Amino acid sequence: MSVRLRYAPSPTGHLHIGGARTALFNYLFAKHHGGAFILRIEDTDLDRNVESAAQEFADNLRWLGIEWDEGAFSGGDYGPYVSTERLDIYRRHVDELRDKGMVYECYCSEDELAVQREELLARGEMVRYSGRCRHLSKEEREARIREGRKPTVRFRVMDDEPVAFTDLIRGDMIFEPQGIGGDFVVVKSNGIPVYNFAVVVDDHLMNITHVVRGEEHISNTPRQLLLFKAFGWTAPVFGHVPLILGADGKKLSKRDESIIQFIDQYREYGYLPEAIFNFLALLGWTPGGEREIFSRDELITAFGLNRVNRSGAFFDAAKLAWMNGHYLRNHSAEELLPLARRFLEPAVAGWQTPVNDAWMIEFIALYKDQVSCLSELPVVGSVLVSDSVSVEADARETLENEHASTVLDAFVKLAHAWTDWTPDGMKSLLKDVQTVTGKKGKELFFPVRAAITGRLHGPDLNRSLALLGRTRVLDRLGKALAVSGARPVL
Ligand code: GLU
Image (cartoon, rainbow, N blue to C red; front, top):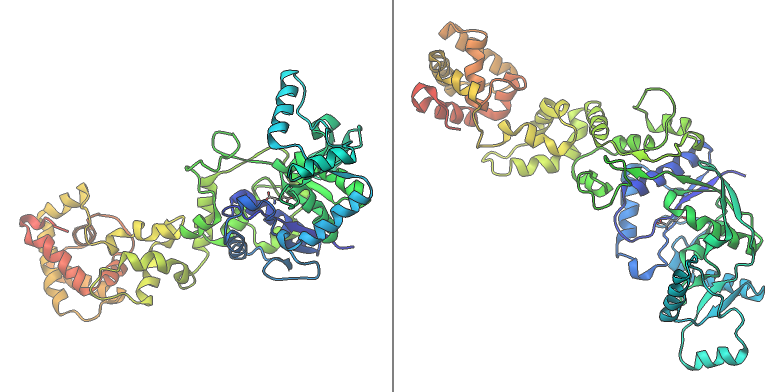
């Protein structure tokens, strides 16, 4: 039988890097073994559901290139793939356990349960359900129904033996029965099953062979195994992926603003999906060796759960930025234009002559190797897109030098009649300035660059001049010359 894995987010917020990493590990494992990857939406916790979150999860997974073979928003033979569309299926399975005497109605109110908990804690005992409603007589039950109490359904925990399983990542795990907390709720008083119940029914009916999920779910596994056993089903194999740690070595808190944590934010900042895909694959897993850049196919070929670390995975934001820079350099400016456009257009929105695609492509080409994400483009290239360019101290010094006004004056005179504002045209223009003034090298280039960009260093001067264009170059040079000693007012 081929493997079947699923990513089963609860639609309660945005797709977090931890969730995306879980989805990716499931995807890579399924693809490595030629099996199926499934997207299931677990929305049984009605109070926590956020409208449109499921759609957003799907969009962000697709953007990352984590496509599912079956599931929500696409369909398949094992649907529906959204928990709240499966309530009848759960109901039938609760009935099955009821018929076997394995579940019972519990009428204890929240307040009564709180009192029971307090008593246990006061005695220094572990919190567990007392089993009070396990043996209600018919009369007692009827009395509670007459009071209008809405029951939950609890699973009768019969075993007093430890629950054991072999985790694909963490090895042999044993849970003592006390840790299970006694008979646990499988259906809430609103009639909706809890996650621990729905997940078992779904994983079984969807033929899931491997459950790979975050370590925070490990304490749910014993309860789920008891349910698999109660139904007489073979449980899937489990693998619990380690936590993601922040720079302080502690579990990454979703509130930690020093790290970008949600996939939609990475999209917003102009990261490339393949960089995040590559980075997340190495977050807690290693193919061995020093290499860090891998294509999707290489990751699929190399992936296995045996090389997932047991200890937490340190989130190295600098490495992600480096990796994204690497992928940016590997794309041509034309390829990046569709992604970069939304960062560039606002930056040049005030320009009198609107810029076209060719301009943006040339701008991207000039700066893409210097940025780690596309949103940095207008920042790194601010001297070419902004009208308020500050003049750095060394540039100011150059402009105050007597050579400067000679060069700038000649440049302006030639530029007025110049028609070829391409990089090659600018090269010829500068050559003519050289002929006229006798200045060359730094004495020629520094004043021009200082006057148009406010600094002495930057990308190719001919291309920068061509990008700025005649009007803006003349405007900047004019301002630089207008002030005595060619001091620029940019
Ligand atoms: N719905 C759970 C979550 O969002 C996933 C549980 C599981 O993978 O079993 O954390």
